[in-house]
Each structure stands twice: as C-alpha cells, then as structure tokens.
Length: 91
Image (cartoon, rainbow, N blue to C red; front, side):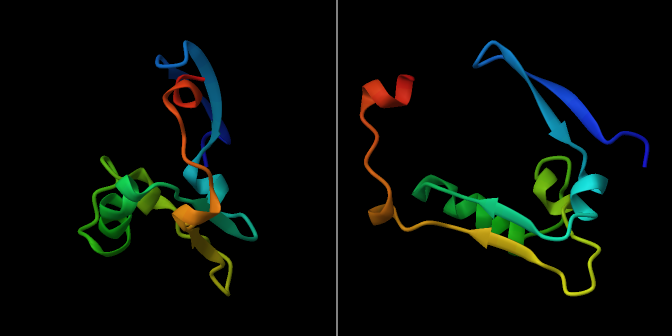
C-alpha cells in the first residue's frame, strides 16, 4: 500500500478534498455507499452488474477484505428527502 490518502482538486467548488485510497477503504471493518437521486440508478446498476471498468467506475475497486464482506449500498427512497429548489441546489 503506497498511500493512505490523496488530495483531489474539486474545480466545481474551487477547493480540495482529502480522499482515502481504495486499499485503505478495503481494509475497513465495514463500508457504506450512500447513493441518492433517481439519476444515479443507471450508473449504480452498471457498477453492481456491468463489466469491470474501474477507470470509469472507481467504486468497483471497493471490495472489503473482511471475512464477512460488509459492503452496503444505501439508496434512499425519494419520499425520505425533500425536493431541492433551484436556490438550494446552488448552495
């Protein structure tokens, strides 16, 4: 394992973020993905059942090494979160 974390530039927010590398995440006791929004359904299906393409779908690299494989994909139902207004979306 070469790096534990890496800094990524986020030009849309004019900021940086720190991200754990996939080997670190795969050594976690459990891993959760939160996927929100109907527009993500097709890509989620592709990540879970499509051909392996980690260059385009880096979440496919996440496969925890724990014996009982606690990898959770959480997709909330739209009725559980409020509609975003244009003003809120710009925030």
